[in-house]
Amino acid sequence: MTLSQLQLNHTILEQRFPHVITKIKKISDNELSTPLFNELFERDTAWLNAVEGVIGNGKILFVYGFERGLSIADLLELYPNHWLFVYEPDEQLFQKAVTEYDLSLLLGHPNLYWLSVGESQLNMMFHMLSSYMMEDLAFVALRKYLSDDMSTLREVKEKFKEYRQSFLVDKYTENRFRQEWTQNFLYHLSDVLYTLSIERLFHAFEGATAVIVSSGPSLQEDIEWLKKLRPHVLIISAGSSIQALIKHGIQPHLAVIMDGHPVNKKIFASSATREQPLLFTSSSYYEISDQNCAEKIHSIMKSDAVSQYFFGLSKKELFISPTETVAGTAIQAAACLGAKRIILAGQDLSFPNNKFYTDGIEHFAAETIDKKVQEAPKKVLNVKGTYNTTDESFSLMKEGLEKLIIALPRIEFVNSTRNGAVIEGAPFKLMEEIYKWLASESVDPDAIADLINKKNIAVDMNKVQDVRDKLRATLEDLSNVRSEIAAIHKLMNKLREFSRTKPAKAQSMVESIEQMWGLIANREWFSPIFESIMPIEIARFDQVLPFIVTEHQLTRKSDLIYEHLGKMLQDITAQIPILEEMLLESIQRVDRRSNSDALTQKSIN
Image (cartoon, rainbow, N blue to C red; front, side, top):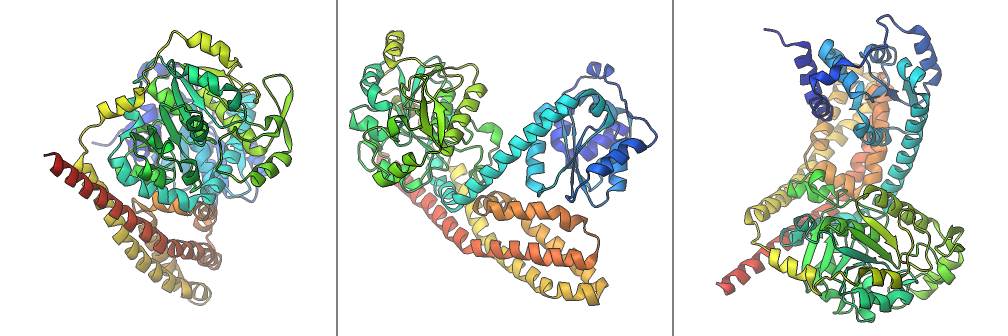
């Protein structure tokens, strides 16, 4: 009995593009009656001629539309040196195609590199395109979409430009903090094993009002109102604002830390700051969590692939995404706790009256701050209708917060920052008005601390052992990788010469090198750890990969492998001792924690 067309197509999709099969399996049969194909069976020569005009020097084609796959097949045949990234916006049309036609050869074609179906998979497509493209990208739309959807196509192009810009900014941010973040991810594993996650407190304060306190200069004018408000709302300090709150005798219900820099030691220098309930993210500076004497909860960020690997978690299980500012982390924490209303305080996002911080913030040198304020190049509308000076960093934070507000439509946002920038989606209200408005609500003084203590349950020792085993296995495997890299280098040293004198031998060496590199790169731990500690190097190699894979001329292919894979392997080798040190310390931290836990258990018994 032969497999049906649908089964054949489903089998290959399952292997290559599982996200697509998950999507189309949700479409019921009665939804498939409407979509119609416009694609002709004969080759569309006029369209292909037009495509030829937009193919640049890049190796990547972004194709908008799939239909029956006929035009895709033509592109694969005519452009064997290009990778196709195909997006079909119409889920039902794609389901109809895989139901009615045998597309297994097309779907299995190695140069059909990526496939996304439906609007929810568009960002996934953008991510893949941004990962692999260099400067040039040819954008091609099937005739159906060229005639019907020109405005949509323009919109998609714009969205992609924005996504790519953000992707590049993220990569450079990751690169800037790569060693700090990787260290924090690994050193926090022990603490994460022994603390509750923010997800475990989901909607524990359903319907509460939360005030997210930041360190802007306007906070000074509202500090007395915050004191009055504390019995009625959840006070959540974002980053350095804890200094100002403690200085004025206000204990936050929760302090949030996201920043991975050791400057946090200054922020949390006083014992009073370390005695507040703490939400630490896995990216935050590890010593703060180490020293915190009070109740703690953690958040593994959606961007932290290292912790996700060691804990066997998927992004879907995590609530908090990275944002440009710790206030964004605090807002998401409040949303997770079930807040129906979020008040933003001290969120100036600019330099009102040429001030950077509220009084009591002391972790930066005054001359550094003065210089930043004096050199601020931009203006932003403030809540009073005049303008404040600001800079690029604050502009990005403002944009990030506004996106977050849009992403949380069920929460009412209010901006109480009386001299700060206008924040779209958070209308301005004076703190004294807010106080009258919220005087009837009440929150226990130790609400979050009490909840953490109540929820704290026995540690899963199987999970502790599992994380320890994974850490040890990764540490051991790093030395195997070092040996495997040395073996590849040995082959590479002769590759370029042989590609010119002994082509058959060189071809065999290319195949061996590709196989050996595949064994390194396909290890389960490789991508999370190396993309964390060397994001720019990995990104650059990914961008040149299409050129290496699609190059058929042996001498040129050998040169590309020698140059680009050779550089990549050198970079990996340079990071191995650093990673070995971090992994060893992470193992020791888990061991110390479980030994002290065992002693505590013994003394209790």
